[in-house]
Length: 230
Image 1 (cartoon, helix red, strand yellow):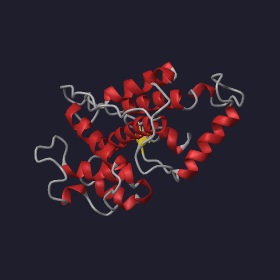
Image 2 (cartoon, one colour; image 1 turned 90 degrees about the horizontal axis):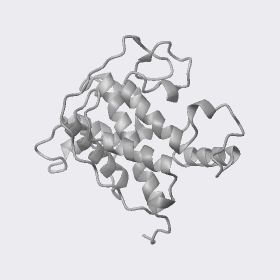
Image 3 (cartoon, rainbow, N blue to C red; image 1 turned 90 degrees about the vertical axis):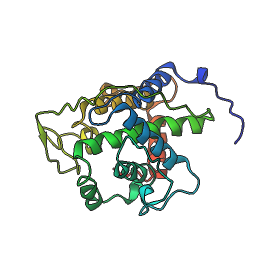
Image 4 (cartoon, rainbow, N blue to C red; image 1 turned 30 degrees about the vertical axis):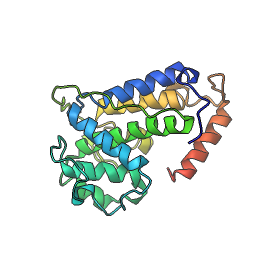
């Protein structure tokens, strides 16, 4: 790997802060997973994203002797799920999702996907910038809050339930609303990495670096290369 010409001090402070806050939250109790469980799942997601010879989409880590530790905090099928989400998202099907929800609750799955999103954002950015990988934080004790919104409804645009009213927002916007803490964390990341939500409608908004058309060109190019079609 080439020597980086980027230092962390060269990165916008708000972006550094957003990444740091999201990364530290990986070790903290969530809504449906404990701190140790979230940290384990984050480690599996990071391995899935970074290993040069990944497991095939149909191969579950739990079926390979020695791939997972014997003293797991999170159940093996959760590790199987986050590995596939993190490395082979394009292969997911609704029937696969329904099978996962036979092992996990749908809301635990939403948080699990949020963990994968956080890991992807931080790991990919640091790799692209040539920065050293971040060490995972230490786990924080405590129980998950299990806070459940009272207005959850099925959605036509998503497999998962969302908060009512459904389908009045884009699928990507409403996807995590059933787990409000995870939803807020991910939008804090989006505000720093892309455009603050309130500025989305302004075609001339800029931070003083890239223009809005330049930002959209980068976003569209990344979406195309990552096969993120929505």
